[in-house]
Image 1 (spheres, rainbow, N blue to C red):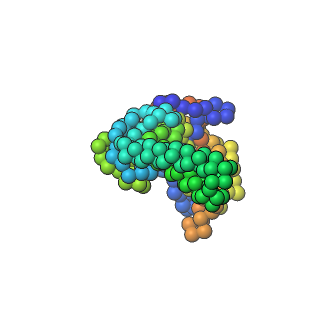
Image 2: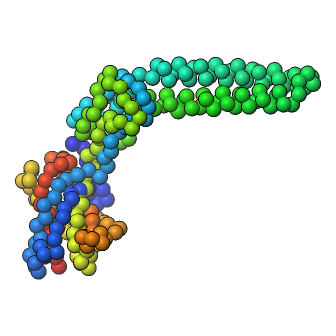
Image 3: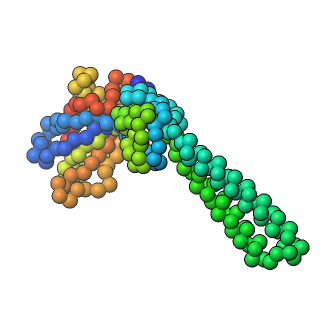
Length: 247
């Protein structure tokens, strides 16, 4: 598994936790259950109605940014684009002829203006056709892996239908949900330990940033952290514990 190095040789990791203020004991480390999650993940969806022609990366496989992940059979859309281009060519020829006739005062300004309007309309249809055909290919938004494949070749997709769940596992983060009272001592740079169940190892970590809003109901706030060093054995979805000692 590849890893990007953050400033100071830090590999960023993320975990989600919910803790209670009652867990606080002066001088004792706080133990919080957590899960490793990626910083960047998304669900790719279809933007047109078309049959899936090819899936470029299947569940669990890696891909590079810009790689074609899903392609659609867009023969109808491309034919409509060709038709729009032909109509534009004819309209532009009409404009050229009408301009010459206007110079010869054979036709009036209105006829020439109407021909220009038809050409503009045809040009807009070409632009719309090009925008539609551009949706026939779904590229990868970043380097990463396919978490779940939701469609298969020869399946018909509708606009908004989920195609692939993908994530970037080169950058993982730690997310904590802690009591807002802890903000008096919990600051960026605060060090703690992360114990991952799957690896059985303890990793040194530190707080990277604080959430921007306190939940008014639970009186908690989200904070994000990172683990020092590069650890290829870590993967999104792993579970563990955070050991955080108050000052």
